[in-house]
Image 1 (cartoon, rainbow, N blue to C red):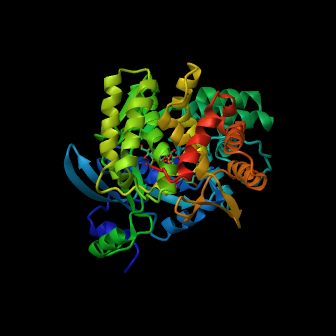
Image 2: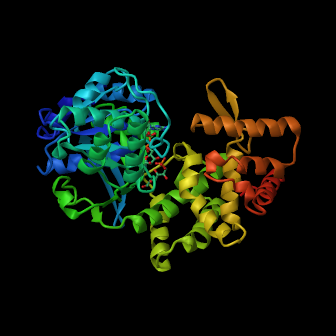
Image 3: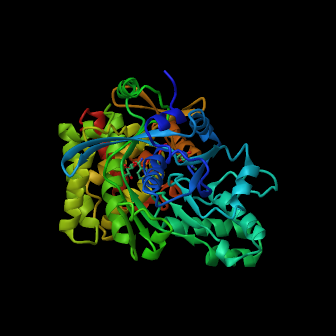
Length: 496
Ligand SMILES: NC(=O)c1ccc[n+]([C@@H]2O[C@H](COP(=O)([O-])OP(=O)(O)OC[C@H]3O[C@@H](n4cnc5c(N)ncnc54)[C@H](O)[C@@H]3O)[C@@H](O)[C@H]2O)c1
Ligand SMILES: O=P(O)(O)OC[C@@H](O)[C@@H](O)[C@H](O)[C@H](O)CO
């Protein structure tokens, strides 16, 4: 069977969407599922209605993402998005062949192309999704002619080339739309960019231009994009559609993009006009906190415990008698009360989220959600624990159990290039996270194994890893003992 290619577009009568002559107005840093199931789909929907004419050039943010770029090019830069789930209680299943990519290339191999795009007069938007680990400042040397590794470092250099190319013209700045679930993601990106500019001694006038001629919009994205489905489902669809698609992606119907900015910006990005749930607001905070702390927080809460207990998907976990009840009660009784907004609204959102988790058509793998769980914990769950610690109260049981599970999940050993842990039933799993985080946590667990120290001491040393948590959690009275107590219960076989 053939791979997806442009002929299928023609067959689907979608020639207009298949246009390849639209100018590239968007540079996309991120080839992952989320952007394909969210931003690119929005561009696709807007193009279908003739509201947006630009094309997207997509690049991967890390050298390791190259295979997906190659896979995209291997199918004419097309992919299929299936939107599946309950929409206002009604089951929906829609298939779209998304054709917004005018180019897909490896910025590490084709650095010159990246620079050409950066200085293109057509370019107007830069969209990104590099996970929380991507918008991070890590000192890096600037060597002319060589690609910059980090995402914000790349932007700093590319913006400098644009500044030089247009002689610092104030109308040649770009609109940045980072989708990372980082608090005030636009501000965070801008600050990192400025830090690189300062490190590299770029002129003050350039730094001024970065802040005055460019817009780094803070935004909050909300849609569960589960990515590639189970193979059995994929094969059934391929047989039905008559083509194979390595980049097949499944998402739920629900979507929300809250963007902090004046509504007039919507004229440049006409997503709301296309009928999409895109909200321009002057205050993102309520949207952000509600979503990150409840929806993402609950994901981060359930993931380590689920994987350790041999559960594979979110829905399966929510249907599990004890684990599902654990998640619901921790969210309702321990997370919702920490949010400074009307409680009824927060409870209603939590219930809506539980329903989304139960979407019978989306199989969202805990293992996918588990990637980079350390930085996710810091942003998504730790603020809820802090709410209690700040008041001098003990961390409530559910949140403490989530933390204990996270630390136990990171009981890993290096095995070749991977870090491997062992679930409660002895099965091995691989943990994907920042190398420094893995190295640090593995070292603490290794020492614990060698010295036979008390579990409370091990918990204390894990909690003291300040660079991982942003603070020394071992200083919170009683927390190490609480974690050790939960581990002891698991050792006795009380695991749910
Ligand atoms: N999938 C969803 O439902 C969803 C919903 C909302 C937000 N998000 C955002 O998407 C992220 C996960 O992306 P996905 O679902 O597309 O998964 P994915 O695995 O398909 O893609 C992850 C992307 O992040 C990049 N990345 C990973 N670690 C990085 C690092 N250290 N530095 C730079 N880039 C890095 C990868 O190269 C890839 O492009 C989340 O962290 C969140 O910010 C996802
Ligand atoms: O996408 P991640 O890996 O940052 O986090 C996993 C999930 O919490 C996340 O994808 C949610 O499903 C999403 O944020 C819903 O909008």
